[in-house]
Amino acid sequence: MIRSTSIALVCALSASQAQPAFAYIKFGVPAGGRTVTLKWSQTPRYFVTTDTVPGVSAADFQGAVARAFATWEAVPTSTIAYQLAGTTSARPTEDDGSSVLGFLDRPDLDRVLAATDFVIDVTTGALIESDIFFNSAFAWSTAGEASRFDLQSIALHEIGHFSGLGHSALGETELREGGGRRVIAAQAVMFPIAYAAGSTEGRTLKADDIAGITDIYPTSDVNATLGSISGRVTKDGQPVLGAHVVAFDPSDGSMVGGFTLNNQGSFSIGSLSPGPHIVRVEPLDDADTDSFFSSTARVELNFRVMFVDRVIVVPRGGDSGSVAIAVIGK
Image (cartoon, rainbow, N blue to C red; front, top):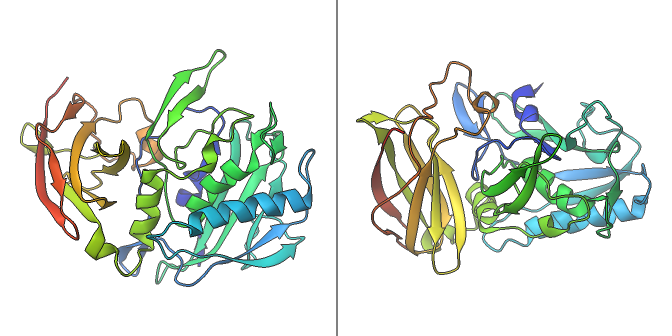
């Protein structure tokens, strides 16, 4: 077993940093000579610490965390479930075989509200332990108080990581005076920048989050009731690595994203509702690509945002068939 530093680095929720560019994406880890999806093979048991911070008692903390876990458990198309094992005096981030959620005082991480890390079985890729810490250098609340970050919202995001989900790029920000960014709107709890202090808007899962957790932990009937869009993105006949592909459902306004993650320019967006979708492709030209790809990866940034020139129909229990998308240079 090892602590996967590369995964821990992408699981921090920021108060204001420039956003990484992912739609819902599963973590993949090398195990036994192959890449496997990072997930729990059995119901994860977690402990909560008894530490408190101003404005949040131990009971407040346990209640907010329990509500966040329950929100993920309530997704009807997913089998994910969690079990509270009790309270502990242990601190999160200790490699002790137990998954622990609690506060840590990290004033050095002045833009990190919370972070999740993992211990992984490198033979099977199974999750063994995952800890979440909430940075007590920030002001916290469980009641939506002004000037305090909402613990339940931040816990919901971090539990997404705890369950195997990465970040989503489905959100919009604007530059703040003095640096950093402010969230205007987000179409995913897994968007990597938190709403401003005092907001409780991050307590509700969006379509992108639901599709992601369903993809990792599907119920037995998902393959028969939902569908997918897959295809390939090219530029001048060559495959595009790192394109952000978004499927928009006009029937309810929901958006679910995917990503070209290989050198063939292939993508697949799963757990979609059957019916017509509008597909958009965009580059990662406002993101720190080194946060998600190796420094040697040839991520293509020089192409225009474009919409596929036809409606893509997602069949019930099937795939759209390969959608060929040829983007144009800027």
